[in-house]
Image (cartoon, rainbow, N blue to C red; front, side, top):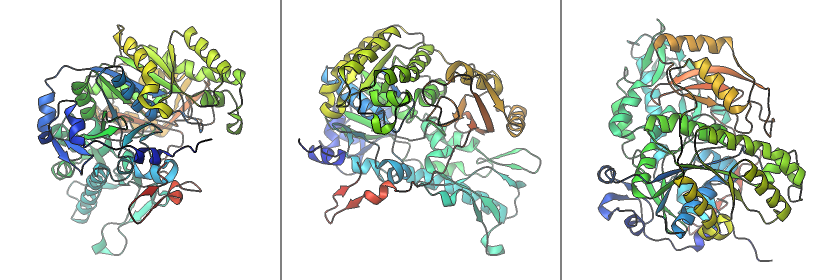
Length: 558
């Protein structure tokens, strides 16, 4: 049996085209690009302005079933689909999120697709790329420094040191920084207080950049961000500290979308990277809108399962950005569905039709939810060699019963060629008339919006709001900051807030423990369960398996 190449070996076996050549296929000239070497570029503001006059292509969202340790392959499918669309003669671009160093070195080892459905240069994309996340880290921590300096210099804004809500960030998983004490060392070293670190992708700076329409809009969003409350209980913003100009300056390059290519040299926009379990989980609005102007079909993805990423894509990103999707692809694997049906991970290679039928309940609820937004749905099954004909037959029948077409996606092994069937079914679905609408009205109260999400979307019985969260809601209502979309911070492993409740649980309660506003991003964050905004490293971090030789060749990035 031939040895299976790793992702990085496959990526290194393909000769990349200069990014200038790739750019020409979507109407970009060399002067439109700001080059980062030969194979990466940022797209200039002038080019974005010029292309904005083009007609929009069709918007395809790729989402997934509830994640399991067996894996689903959403990015692989998104990349494969855009290559498949180009294979059947449709001009397509993919828009993805930027990987974060924390998970890359912690649990993942990379996030640029897999097999023959990758974006390249994958080592660069997975590491520092064009420095966007470092710029966000710097902008966030500049604001932190300005807050503490304001306290040191007399506290003219009368900030209550006990009610500073802005946190420092780092683009690395480091549990020891979750709770820290700063300002020790005497009067000259600052005002002592408790502080906290989050991972960079959890910063509101990331969310604001991803939802901004341009640099001026970003500056306005940064100014609106609430950093603390004063001793009278009124909010203090980044604008009150005159921080927005300097922060926007640090982000002036980061706001420009990044252009790279797939293994088949089709264009890929990679820009922004918030997680869907702690933020809204989509790539930047600027990149998405640009991709629509550059293509007939713009393929994009939302983080984790459809209960998180897809809902936030529709209710937050599409609402705030005026986007209208044309079709949804739900990615699943037979092995993951069998896990939802109760199978142990070690037994997944064995045929088990009954477990598949039981686990299908998870996919069925996601199908129902996506159709609930008024959109046509296609199911993409990432193929594994040990998927049996009996399992495929049963799954096809179940999908047909739920009124959706199933496509066996083989992008990992065959690239675009293995995704032509999915591409054709997506084109057909996108041509259907749809009735896209949102899940809730933002004018409803926060408890009403929460009940809609939990009962109508997750399949739960009720929402329990803690006393502390009720108090926070009342504060937001008093400040007039409650008429915004809801961003649920919830485990990605279940419809419920219990990560162990696989499949399609019913009758559960979800407890909202904390409610805070991301005023710059434009949504209200409702935290449920134990959500880590600064993850830790696992027992054996992915970093331990990585290395680089004297010539700079890397291994361990998948």
